Image (cartoon, rainbow, N blue to C red; front, side, top):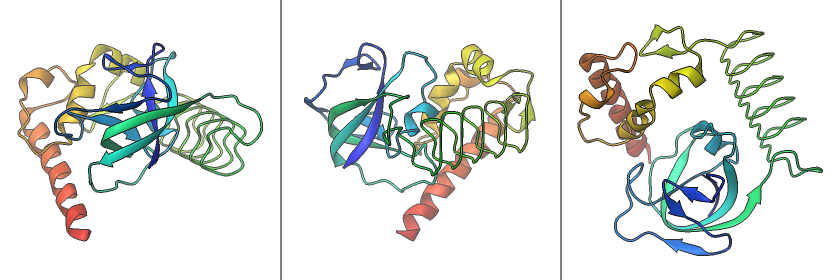
Length: 219
């Protein structure tokens, strides 16, 4: 199937070196968020996981894909055993190839409609990475906002922007991956994440596990 994958500026992902036009095969089992080649359904999906300005996005072909529940949203990702990088997707291309999956966008990498910014899943935003509508700022899930919001962590407000939060607590990325597994999560590596407690982490993980069970039961 067709999908989209991110690499660093050297075409590496987590230390693995990719080559354009070459099939790459993972040895061993494939496990979501743990083992195998990961990619997203939508061209804007990789930007939900990568913030580095030198990130590169590639259209890929994937085979031997793990059968997992399909989640809503641009960030939905999959894992496969074989993958080939077909071509690089570059923001700012002319014509119709702007990597938008929404309608009437003048920006790029949007899955919403009528955006003039970038990487928006909401509508009519002029900033970037907004999931709300009519925002003139960045990273807003609200409406008509002009100030970038501070991050809420474990349901409590922080005084950090998203960039500050992820820069100060990079272990949040690993916790996000750990939530996709049913294995128990050790609290110790994540104890410094704002507002986390063992009880909150357990409750959060249980919600993820319950949602996966519901998705599997609906198939």
